[in-house]
Image 1 (cartoon, rainbow, N blue to C red):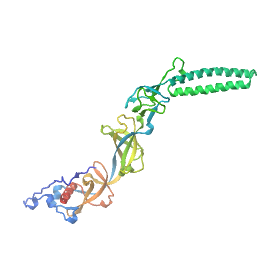
Image 2 (image 1 turned 135 degrees about the horizontal axis):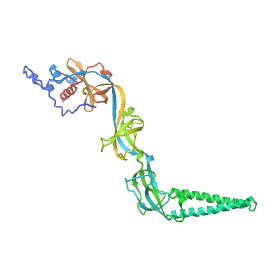
Image 3 (image 1 turned 60 degrees about the horizontal axis):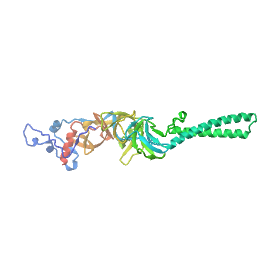
Image 4 (image 1 turned 120 degrees about the vertical axis):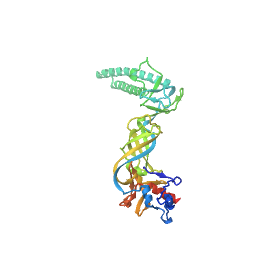
Length: 383
């Protein structure tokens, strides 16, 4: 809000009123001329000349349509669904690591190479089973033809059929195992058997952690890398209790970080946690409209939410003054007397400030220009 804040130790305004008659009493300052009774210390009385010197004017509570700008702050986090732990399907020794912590990678990029004799054995088993399956297929077809002419028993044909089916299932299983470790079984032959397999990136993102070293033996249960998919970046923002009812899912917001406060990116609130924490705030979760590498996990961020125009009751900004984190206005009581009244301020813009529960102030004359001077006179007197 556009209030003027003061301190009891910095109130130094002195309005010296000179008189044509030159009388000593009229040469006194406003501070000296505004004496307060102890039982009426929230009221100040001005002389006519003091009123003219201050240029005091009054106003009344007005109905206004105002927009509210809510400022939020929080941290950038990654949705659990977009943090991946990468391991090897089969154990082996780390032959090479092709990334470093924090490095960017693309989907399908080789992150590491693992070597082990069992990879050779798996490929051999596949090729042997493939050859056996072909022989079993020929035998089954032959036995089926012989059985048709009753030259072969049903049992012999059924045995040939069972062998063929078993080998076919075994081959399919081996083919799937090879696919999982990144070996194309269809193109496998005795001439291209290899002892190494590649660990591929499942998406485009960043390396968060590397948990292995070259030469290390790993088991299938061991985690090699922690990877972050930036598409899962979420902004967890604090919403103070006074603003909870104004911040809703689906609202467009602008976000920025402390390093580049002038560069603002668009985002959308996707959810608001329906609970107030001990600190007096709720949590709103927002997602960036597009991937922005300037926002990283753990970074502090700020956000601005423009709330739609709403009907309010308010006063011009200069009529509302602030002292020790509390807001006040001055009522014109008549006969040059002015009373300080505490108020609860709501939203504000460049011209007006919303007054919450403003009904008691309706139809009252409120000091506009000069409210700040009255506050200083009153607080100086309190000292």
